[in-house]
Amino acid sequence: MLYRNFTKDKLRVSQLGFGCMRLPMLAEDNSEIDISLATEMVRQAINNGLNYIDTAWGYHEERSESFVKKALANDYRRKVFLADKLPVWLTDDYAAFSEYFHTQRERCGTKYFDFYLLHSLHKKSWDKVKALGVLEFLDEMKAAGYIKYAGFSFHDAIPVFKEIIDAYPWDFCQIQLNYMDTDYQAGLSGMRYAAQKGIDIVVMEPVKGGKLAFVPEEVRNELAKADPRVSPAAWALRYVWNQPEVKVVLSGMSTMDQVNENLQTASYARAHSLQKHELAAIEQARRIFTERTQIGCTSCEYCLPCPYGVNIPGVFERWNNAYVYNLADENRASYKKLIEAEKDASHCVACGRCEGLCPQHLSIIRDLKQAHAYLQEE
Image (cartoon, rainbow, N blue to C red; front, side):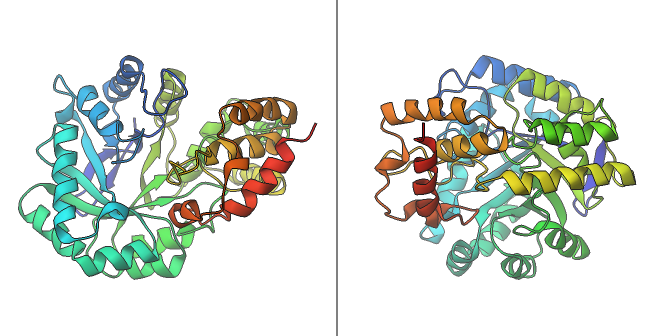
């Protein structure tokens, strides 16, 4: 495992972090975590040098934090830095900050959080919680020793990002970044802006919700020209680790094979290590994906639960997969299962709730109609 200096105190943090939002499940129900396997995976990672664990209030339908408590039992908590996030969309007054925070400490079984973030900030949520005094709350928790380092995760446009960066002496921030999203949301320019301000970067979605791991043959062939030994997922991770401003890359790992492969990649991928021909191969992969992708959904599930039962990420996943991976028949067959379960896009009534929650700011109502029409074709 390679490590990078993190925060002004130059903490020795593993460059690979374990994001606990895509843990293995016992069934399709996202709340049914396979506790035994997931615990084995987390401890395998820690035993091999990983020391950054990331969770949040809503992950796995509010089961992730309690899972982390179990996984970090038996002295594993002291071996890691633990990050959690305030669900700002659920807070309506100052007292709510404290209520959620201390509930999270109890769920995670920890006296304090090494890293604590305002979760999924965008213009509206930022303006709300700032007015409610959330920055004073962070100061209060830091002074009490409940938070060691304060940050935020972000999903909006670059002007909003800069506004938030400039508003508080943040220790770090978390942004979405991968070789498909270099100019999306904060992107590379936001990464550099934060770094210039002395604020370190944690990256989420480095493999774009798995989409850069399971690639069409055309993409795989382009990447293989640069080095056939490197998997598509490893190329995606290497691209992000190539940026010296990035200190931790979060991976939502769902299998032990993913854990082991990511640990191996994290043992050699360094900043400024990609050669010109390797960067050219990644750029070619980007071009191919851009031409094929229908919608930029990352399956973060912030849009769920839909009041009318629509499995929004499931619909978009099938739509994208059909185009990007040339798997139309398989994904139309899979979509029939959503129809049978009454979770397909036909149940959308255009209430707009999902669009207000989507960190990608997708036109979900419009795109659900298009996806439904395509996935029902014979």
